[in-house]
Image (cartoon, rainbow, N blue to C red; front, side, top):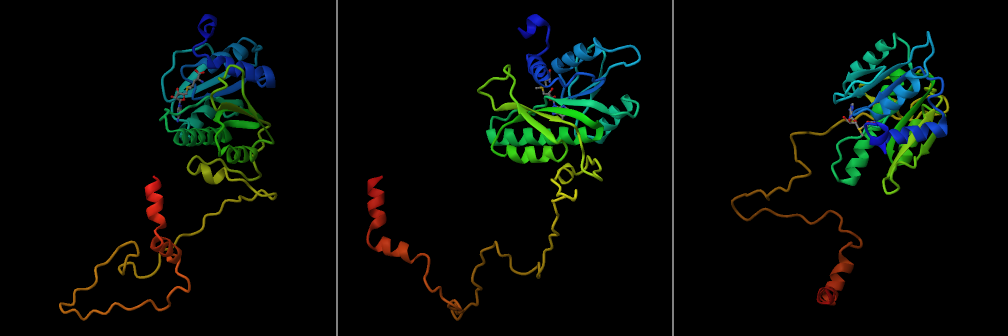
Length: 280
Ligand code: SAM
């Protein structure tokens, strides 16, 4: 159906269904499509914003992707990485210093097939999208992004709630039921007081804050101490070779009151492990 209707990818239906539900594109004149190639979400933006623009209120759409994308009416393309400060700067300069009304991101890393790894990388890409969004979105604006609903998803929701009072997880009908893919719809961008966007250390800045707006994430200093040229506790050392057998191995200063291995030794004596082995 996507091909029949002229969409570059069937994900166009996902954005259209999200918009039908949340009406996010109403009144939008500046939009950013992160991870946009081959461009079906940009097509939806182009269709909805460019076709409905009024005179003097020209629609501006920026599409960012690592890969090149075929041109689309009214869409400016930036071939770049969403984790780079230069990409954020280029977006803002395209909007003549103004900020976007909406940022959307359907980004996906190359799938490895290792589910935990794929979920983790997807979450990292989403955080990168959220981070660049904090540079380019106007207060009150919206952010829509693809997520994988894995076991650690509540952490991600908490991070998003730091910036958006309204966060909804949405599953368009055009997204396969069997897929853990869903989309978070974040509305009314309200960064914490004194928040300064920082591309260099996103995880630190995206940490939840307390009621006073202070960051809850702390870095505890790590200091190595002791004689670093001395014994290494991860090494096994040979007994010193004194040449004559006079090296005395001392008994422990305090023997354990009840040695943890005693019950295992007792079982061994009674042949418990032999029985176990024969059952196998
Ligand atoms: N929304 C697109 C559409 O409707 O046609 C499909 C997007 S595709 C599923 C995911 C895209 O994410 C790929 O084109 C990939 O190049 C892009 N991507 C992944 N990591 C990126 C990054 N760090 N910066 C920019 N784009 C990235």
